[in-house]
Image (cartoon, rainbow, N blue to C red):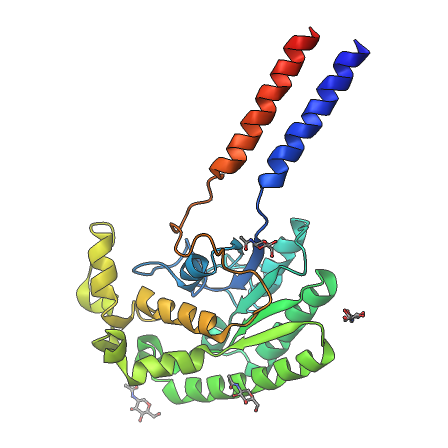
Length: 311
Ligand SMILES: *[C@@H]1O[C@H](CO)[C@@H](O)[C@H](O)[C@H]1NC(C)=O
Ligand SMILES: *[C@@H]1O[C@H](CO)[C@@H](O)[C@H](O)[C@H]1NC(C)=O
Ligand SMILES: *[C@@H]1O[C@H](CO)[C@@H](O)[C@H](O)[C@H]1NC(C)=O
Ligand SMILES: *[C@@H]1O[C@H](CO)[C@@H](O)[C@H](O)[C@H]1NC(C)=O
């Protein structure tokens, strides 16, 4: 009987080891933000930047905490948890992510602008939350997004606050840049990369046809009245002729340019972000590999052969 227990224990250990060995580790990509990043709550005519990034940097394991309408710290109790609450939620999950392979991203500011927050308070908030991730999660790799030129959005133009918005955004972006530079000096072991969405957007808005966009000013939703459920393919191609999807949101084609700008910047050349064996994997395949199944089944068969031979 004791031999039986010995063999059972031994083979269970072998089985677990065989299976676990095939679990390929990925780079955790933990993202906090608003509707420009949230995947299920807010409208777009196709995938957003984060999903497109996953197709290029295919060695990512994404945890997306972004919620549409989120500010950096305001509206703590509202339906759109701010970045501060999103990071609380991350810590409540007691994450065990390896700091050397984890990437954190913060993309926020539009809702703070719209709600008349002071730009420098938002920069201080982003700085505080980044520091928290460095000190509490030992975070080392960060992507911090600056403000998009939201002063060009249909919403801001309709509200006739273009000048106010443009000034807010300019000051915010300057302050954020200075703050990130000083954080980089304060934490030399971290890599804090500023993602310049402002320049990416202006390049497109100034040369829309270079990006297949014929409508850079008016938005798709108000002017085309599509039925989003009827034909996703048509929604994607027709929508991508526009810069703005609705009065506040960009189309999937613009999201693709954010993703391309991040990849082109090569923020973390030392991280294995791309799986060399699968240059263009299917977007949503998280299925287990055949090799792994083979090892598990092999271990399982060995286990039962051993069991039968003992009994
Ligand atoms: C994926 O990333 C993990 C964590 O950085 C690394 O250990 C692994 O080797 C990478 N896999 C590939 C196929 O590059
Ligand atoms: C927009 O604001 C400008 C300057 O404050 C003003 O002259 C103009 O009449 C306003 N337009 C609308 C539509 O409110
Ligand atoms: C930074 O990295 C160096 C070398 O890896 C290490 O000795 C040092 O303790 C680190 N500093 C901090 C603040 O983590
Ligand atoms: C940030 O500031 C540095 C130094 O002034 C400058 O070289 C860089 O272009 C700025 N980046 C952005 C995105 O504004």
